[in-house]
Length: 223
Image (spheres, rainbow, N blue to C red):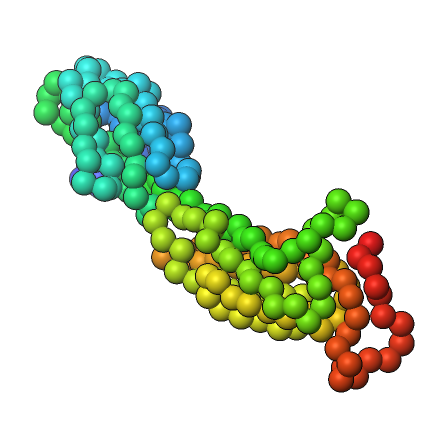
């Protein structure tokens, strides 16, 4: 009987202890690594600042901070700067050490974005009518995308001439059979697969060729 009472008492004490510990917030004893970043996504090149001053130890002090930036770079100290030169996704990790030799780590991702290419083009020959550039129907027009550029390389040039016709290449030629205003679209792609478009309106004047199959009114000028 006494043995049963003792077991019951111990069981009750254990339940009380578990209940109390469940209600209390157990404070961490080791370092707690935390940091903020000035930039988590930006076009390269850019400088990101990292601040670990929120890191703490409940009973002690942080004695060292070690950073790795995911691109092979590293640094030390509570506040650091790092320059990202190449596009990609990078894992930034902070590891802190307290005076007792305990450590803690935390990480975040930083996106270094590829700058988009710039699409530009010119065309010739062209004349001026009423202070507006114009070209003639049935005239061979040269379109040149050499003014396009990228931080590395433009690898393709795709043209749409506004009359259902298309072409590829940095320099292309095209003839418009009918007068009107056509939106010419140049799409350039860089070596990272990013694209940009440039759109210019081309005003075509004159008549259709004699053998053209034309019905209805023909616009003779560009509005």
